[in-house]
Picture 1: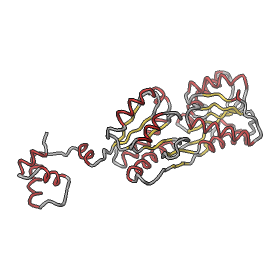
Picture 2: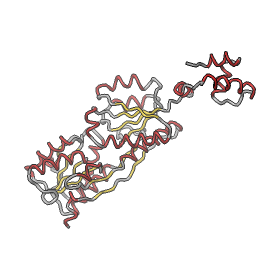
Picture 3: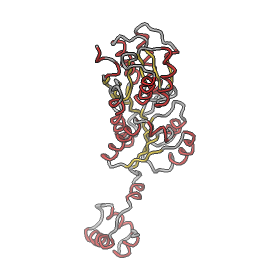
Picture 4: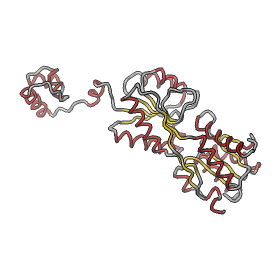
Length: 336
């Protein structure tokens, strides 16, 4: 491999002068620059981009941390869509991106390896549980980071999110406007902020209509298709007339169980989901759902992180993107 030392020897310049020429430093005479560049051309020297980035204090590599098991990651379409947004933004800013897929129990090992080795300019963290020690470790480090999803107990943390509370409330309100009154919910994991906030929106909607929040009509589906199916089986004997399902992935499992039970959607039970993943449009019947801009969340997370890297003293940035109710057949609006 060609080195700066070899170029210096052949050109008769010092190593520091060769380095200035390679880095286009103007403080080199034209004669010396031409002599060094001629040797560079003959040897076909290619600067080590990684070494140059490290020397400049930047690697132009961002990390994405999703503290979920790998099997869960690729069974939920939300994450590939989010990563598409991250990748698109990184490409546009000439950054590389690396994805960490370790199990939650490996986080301590990860923190020791990555937070202090200088290989990343910053990290994006998505879908962490509320008690995740990773946030504490990141906050104590000098590594810039952004969350996808707010963190209620870390006020100085930067994040991008949607308003899950008001969005869930609007989804349940839509079911009320369609005449449904015995409305159940299948929640996401109760130790995630999305799970907590979407359940809170369900509670607010019921109470605004003077209805009690019945524990038997609230079942945790864990944000998985299998969890949604299991939750629906638990709700079947209680005969709700509508269900707010906190993710489209769970709603797919709900629809499968309702078909097996011979129940019609929306005539017997109306459904509203959350996310508007491709599965919602292709469900049978097509799923009414609260659309969140998943790709834009990934893109905005990158843009926010790069702003923090460039302006470390700019203060916390908290960005809330809009949602939209997409009305399809599963809620019954087309029957009215």
